[in-house]
View 1 (tube, rainbow over the protein chains, first blue to last red):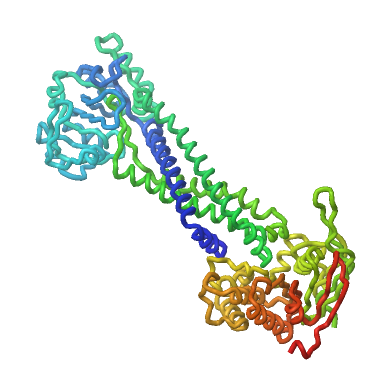
View 2: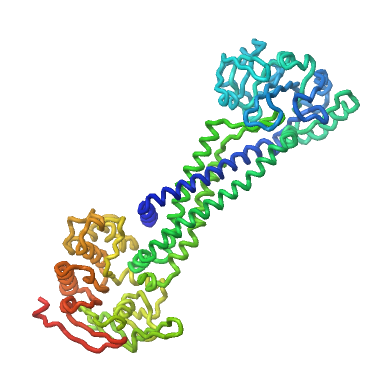
Length: 378
Length: 234
């Protein structure tokens, strides 16, 4: 503890250098935490787990929601298949089919079925009844609402669709957080696809091991139909549909790695300069009886503190940034909410500390390996 | 009574390029407990090398250095560090106080290595500060002290853990006459009244006159010994 206090005091000697180093670490760790937040959000959206039991039935060989048109009457056929728990027809309208940072997605669903199909949805402002009663009512995901500054009672227009916000919803599913749910017939008419036509069906099956057999059964059933289907698990559907977006986010991994090396170099340089400026003083400490281990520990503690302080600023800065800005990446009607997570925050701070310690190992060795008499004579 | 320092046939050599340098050659010396010994000689005579060997900062090439009966010549670097932290107080020419620490905190440094409580440390630090006459300067940083006061703080740091042996490398070399005299009086008091054994390197004959005994070194060998009369010491 005494050594830690000494190390902390040492950092205040050259305040400007310490502040600049901490700012550099903070900038690097901000970038690293941002990249990790994107990677983590993507992983949550695309990795299938045993708890995932949803299939998406899409028009075969179609990619954008505006080109996927399926007859609504498929609903009863799919519902009657063994192993199928629930089915919901969805009409989707988006303002931009390509990759976008501000995608607006309307999901037209039968209002009486939505809550039953998706009990995870919680109305955090406004009311579900208002949504059911108003034919132009919309339940808006909280990310969407934050981004657009919407609250219950507000009217807004996008993609030629005018709606009134009936409620703000939260959900454990990232997709629900970024869309506006509206009445299916209303959207079918407003988006001019016509009644009886939907973009997709979301199908819940009894268990994860039934995903593949039921997907095959659905596609087999409509194979000879005028509108053949392509059925995939929801997260696999996301991974395939948003492939470009995923590749783009995958590339950011290199930026994160670059940030890590930048922080490593920055702290190593700063600590090395500190050590070089204190060759004689370290020798005096050793003359007073401080062991080489204690001197090395003091140097490493300085690196640790630079990493910790810079890491806290950078990582908490990135967490706050994504929390308040509610960024959403969209592609082909699917949205990826870039949401901060506790695990990314903690691992980011841990990484900053590890980098601080790692980068001060060589300076610590330099500070203690020189013969004492030689250091005293510098 | 056995001497505190007993040096037997010590030689120190080191290489500089292709040349072998011998700063000390077959040197033997005894220093009794409580003696204030001054080492004088021209540059390169080996006095600082001898001081460093006595302080356990360096090790001899051959020979024995017994301090209070323990041969420190063959201790490892780690063992020497541990030994120094208990038995030696070092006073530097340029004081070498840590600029960001107050006088109190500088003096506290050697005590941080032990297991004393905060209250015990405080008691020792205040006693050391009072002994060097700086009881009212505890919170001052080195930059707020004069050269003489800084050296007093450095002496307090050297004695705070109550070592038997004090080594001083030109302790008055950077001070004006008045400050130098008061430092020498303080060192003399530490030897005479507090039974500290002091070995001091100096170029200054006046400083040397404050010691009980003066040894002249030349080319790594002792060439002359003189004792200061008791009357002039008082």
